Length: 210
Image 1 (tube, rainbow, N blue to C red):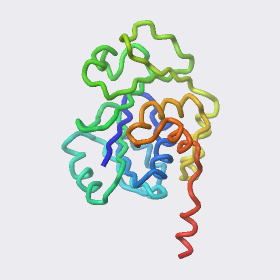
Image 2 (tube, helix red, strand yellow):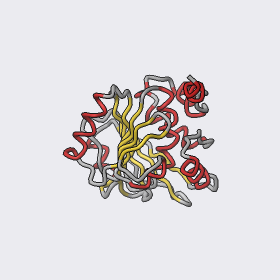
Image 3 (cartoon, rainbow, N blue to C red):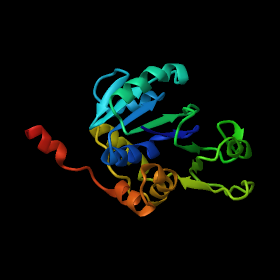
Image 4 (spheres, rainbow, N blue to C red):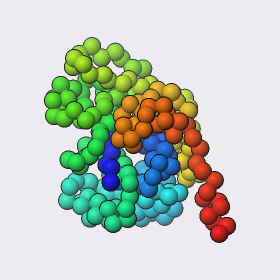
């Protein structure tokens, strides 16, 4: 099982939704988060739900101890990809981390240099209404700077209202997700870009008629 993480103190749904859609096409996917907002994706108010073919786990106090039984269950279900979204938690054996923050100066309260020194399997990104150029960036490291756009909120609302994942037609975000995760999915950048753009297969309706 490949574990991937989106972490940092920013609105992560704008990255998680298109990644979940693409991942569910690539293989069996589960999603673990400490953010109760993701309950909007499935029926009922429990801490576990289904969206299309993705199992979603909500764990408000997410840490290694509370995540352990969920990880065990996910392993038993032969999940290929586990995506984790949390402000600050990610397991030590995660394949790749996308750290996503609203403030340009620090990531999760740490200076950029400290984060980079800790591990090298990370991608850094910021999002803001009006991005400010970051002047102090560690040599040889790139920080992706995104800007909130008018179409982002309708995309989030429509996804939650219909409880159906759709591709996000946003070049910057798709490029960021490709940079961060294409290699983890064992795909070339162009292949992963196409995966992000693809609509869901029609097999779901066919399966329901069987």
